[in-house]
Image (cartoon, rainbow, N blue to C red; front, side, top):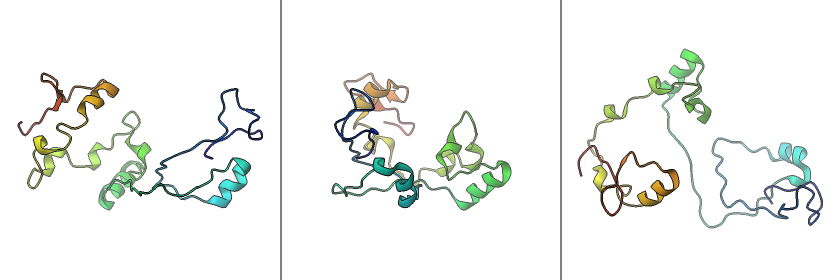
Amino acid sequence: KVAGCTGEPGSRVCSSDAAEAHVALEVWESGITLDKPVFQAKLGALMPEDLGGIGYSGLESYFVTVESKMHALNNEGLALQFYTSYNRSWHDPAPYFKKYTDVGDNGLLPCSMSRFFHDGLSKYVAITGDAEGLDTSGDKPQAKCVDGP
């Protein structure tokens, strides 16, 4: 159970459409330290129950150098280890990073050899409506590559 109503199973106290059981197949929480006793005390019978894995594990992460983190923190109290610091309407984290043009292309695959050049772009456009970075003149959308076709 991941979420639930406050009534007994089958009572549908929350609404007429409330499910008796909820399932989460993936939960990504790399930045969260779970203190189960604290959650259990607060949630009681609504505490999610971990039923185990489903056959694979995954990691989520991003890397920010210590120098970048400290520079942002010391300059404006911006904590780059938290995703909320990247909300452009509140903060501008760009000064604490290099531009993509500073990285150079030595050792990188050309865009046209990337799996993102062909795979999944039709679905991406259908879901997001964002075709600005794509060449849609052919049968299938292709990424617009600044390094050539």
